[in-house]
Length: 330
Ligand code: SF4
Ligand code: SF4
Image (cartoon, rainbow, N blue to C red):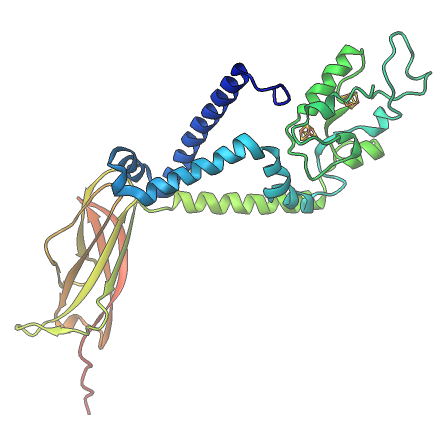
């Protein structure tokens, strides 16, 4: 159609195609954007007047334009020239790596198919040189020339070649997942030291990811002594310290929060009352901790503060409490 002269039908089809491409790109752009700013914020940008979210709207259109450009014009150029995956993978490959490979031992010498001809007697390999594998390749390579950077392992050439093998009454698998060593040396798959090392690295990475995900707390809390302030003397002689706290709720449900001193029997007073932590949000505030002098271990006392929602303890924070230096006795 690209080569056909312009007509009403061509204009209609091209416009419809690009409108559809943009619609899909807009959808993908929005989903990608929501990954960065959250669905609530995205919903606000969509539902509130555009004048209130000019930057967000610009970013949303920018993402959509990038996806549209990739989808409508760049396509496999992204795989072959921009995406670092192919280059990285090339570094990891060796003769033993399983890749989409053409069995050159079996396929060569390639020669056109002639009905009723014995390919063995004609000194021909199994490749009938039909170019089906090249024609279907989205990155336009000829896999018969060996593993190439541009191959995205889509396996379209495997299906195309198998189809030709069936049509010509030959065994399938002329192009298949195999290593160069398997094909050239005609031996079976070997699990090499390099593969074992990669597997070990992968297991460690998956283990670390699982550990991070499984041990992830629902609420992240920090309690820090307010900078620039040391301690205050209360009228009754007790000592107080002022702290700022910050709570981040990573869950989708709101929760009331209160704090308790865990290993000291002092007083903990929240400035402005206990916070209610809304879903997926953050709360900040200040609190006082007041201790008797007898409960302090000199200038610096280590404290544990428990963070609770209802009767459930969700975190324990360690912090320090400062007071006056003890006078040394002669
Ligand atoms: S696997 Fe896909 S990209 Fe690779 S050579 Fe075959 S058709 Fe091309
Ligand atoms: S599809 Fe198979 S038979 Fe046809 S050219 Fe490619 S490798 Fe040869």
